[in-house]
Length: 246
Image (tube, rainbow, N blue to C red; front, side):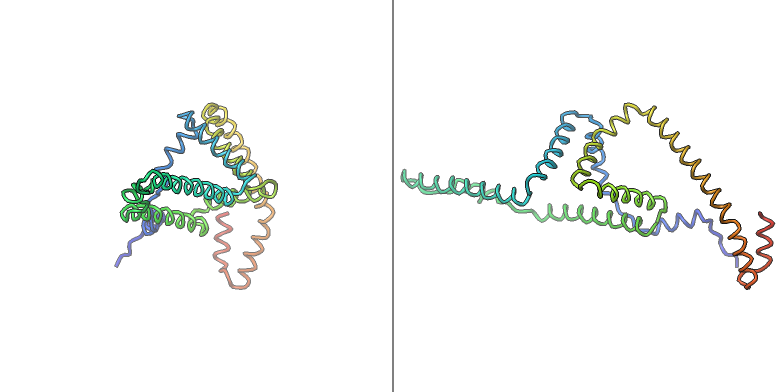
C-alpha cells in the first residue's frame, strides 16, 4: 500500500490550520490610531497628544488615588449640600421636600443591561484570548525571528529602564508615536535609502562574522565527526559521503 508523501510546506500549512485561531479584536482600533498618528485631523491629534502629556506630567506630581479621593469628597459634599438645601427650602415654603435627583433615581437609574454586559464580556474575552495566544506563540518560539525581535525590544527597554523612569519612557514613546510616522511619511524616499544602506552594511558584517566563525569552528567539526565515527556513533560511509559532498 502506497503511503502519501506530504511536502514540508503542506505539513506546515496543516499545522497552522490545527492551531487555534482567535479573531483580532484590535483591528477596529487600527484605523483610529492611524488617523491620530498621521494627523489626518490635526485638532483630534493635537488634543490627544496634549491630554496624554498633561496626564503624564500630572501623575509625576500627584497620585491618582489621592486625586480620585479628593474629587469624590468634593463632589459628594457639594451634592449633599445642594440636595439638603433644596429640601429645606421646599419645606420652608410649605412644599413637599423632594430630592432634585428623583427623576434620575426613578426613570434613569445607573445599572448595566444584561445584553450590554454580555456583549462587552464577549469582546473582553476575545481580547484576552488573542493576547494569550500571541504571547504563547512568542514565548514558545512559534516563529523564531518574531521571538528574536521581541527579545531585542525587551532588551532595549530593559537597558533604557536602567537610565530613565518608566514614565519618561512612556512619554518619549508617546511623543515619537505622534512625530515619527508623519516625519517618515514626509521623508520616505530618503529614510528608505538610508535604511537600505544600513541593512546592506549590517548584512555584510553578519556574513563576514559567519564566515570567520565557520573558519574557526571547521577543524572542531571535523574532529567531532572523526571522534563519532571512531566510537561507532556515526558510520564511516556517512563521514565519507559528507567529505565527498564538501
